[in-house]
Amino acid sequence: MPRLSFSRRQFVHTLAATGGAVVTGAFAACTRDTSGHSHAMPTEPNLARGAVARTPLRFPPTVGPTGLELTAAPGTTTIIPGKSTSAWMYNTQFPAPTIVALSGGRVTATFRNRLPQTSIIHWHGILADPANDGHPRQVVSSGEQRPYDFTIDQRAALNWYHPHPHMMTGEQVYRGLAGAFIVRDAIDTGLPGNALGLPVGAYEIPLIIRDVSLDSGGNFQFSNKSSGFWGNTPLVNGTFNPYFSVNRGVYRLRLLNGCNARVLRLALTNGATFTLVGNDGGLLDKTYVLSEITAAPGERFDILVDFGGLTAGATVMLRDLDAKWDILRGTGEPGTVALLSGTLSSITPLSAPVRDRRFTFDGMTRINGKLYEIDAVEFTVPFGDTERWTFVTNGNGPHPVHVHGAAFQVQTRIGGRGRVFDWERGWKDTVLVNDGETVEVLVRFSAHRGLYIMHCHQLAHEDAGMMANFEVV
Ligand SMILES: [Cu+2]
Image: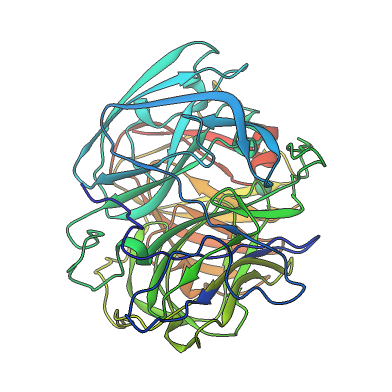
């Protein structure tokens, strides 16, 4: 089974938090010694005078997809060094274990709920059948458990899993219940010698970026008001002020915005470009060279960053330009992986929609004027039909719109930012709709029939009712 391994070389990336500003992290070039081997660094190297001391970037353990036991329970973890933080975690891990599965393979899992409230796991981005999608109707009571058994029939991609109980998703995700779910396939194998030459092993780094507010004791502060929760500190893979030393090679960074509400505008502090290769639905048609990406909650981005230009000991930060957070710092030495460019995969465009639907995201709580009704079915979608769905805001954006049960292709954005960005090409399951924007997507439900939901992935909006059931028939 493919595994993420960081044993080949030691890399330390730093993700730093500065008050009020979000810096996602830093990458620094390791000094190359005469033997040609880099050394593990127990503490952050090359710390500039006055710089914030950083913690080695944490990597959640990886697990396979069968016989999974996922227990959600309160526990303690360490976020700020020396302080114990009460969290809600799957299998005591913050973030949750990274599930790695093969396309075409089966997932079998038992979810045990040891939280003091109901919960359910949703596999965000996985086209699970309705019985396994983690609909809010399927919640598991405290002390109870539920089996999952489904087959993964989709392309390789970075997905994730998190709770989806009605009205409580925001708090449960915030308190620590979220993890990455990586799907591999015959092209994106995650193994050395893969056809595209994608960086693997220690050069493939999942980065779950989220914000948090911690009190002086190190515990989470949280407010569930429907305007949304914005933390004052970024965490990457649950790491406070992280760093990660990189070799001067090409890295594949697999980014997930796991924030409750915050939209991130990610860039490298040296102004360098990077190469976008994939997003929510896996590899794009070709590579795109970019200097920044706007990442809304729930969205994933797969980028290649070439640290080959870094001089030894030099530092680069992954930064949120909006919050001015330096999220991750890195440093490096010469690497051997070449930066790829050109064709990546074949993506058949959806076209000729047979039906239009329009969804207004109203205020902080409603879709098309309606609060979520868990027992209602708002509309039915014929299986296999291509439809045009138009998302419109009526204030209180940003609204990251997420659809379960199918991936879609973004067609147009009118108003606001006024265009579709390269990072929104290919297959998406979440698209950012800012106030003043109308976004059209084409979607076709061809995986499973049955009950699914669409909703705003600003979790406070979702919890307050900005969600709708529909049925594929
Ligand atoms: Cu919203």
